[in-house]
Amino acid sequence: MAARTASVNARIEPGLKRAAERILANLGMTTSTAVTMFYRQVTLRGGLPFDVCLPNRETIAALEEAERGGGKVYHVGSGRELTEAILNDDDE
Image (tube, rainbow, N blue to C red):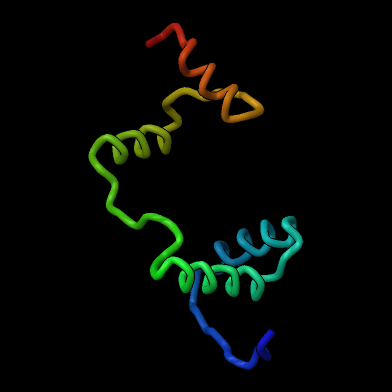
């Protein structure tokens, strides 16, 4: 493995930094490890490792509804349970 001698500096919101670092710590990794993983994925994929796009009108409306406290909440333990709950929802 090559020596780690390069630095990356970024200015981000302090609250976002604290929240992300708390999650990373729970995952057992440092910010440096997470940034290294991100850079490796960018290099492997030849771009960002996630989709970057503008939300459509339906998504914007759903986000706005969620911010107002609307929408449905499902308490499930897995993706399969969520799918079943949605498919079995009597309101739709």
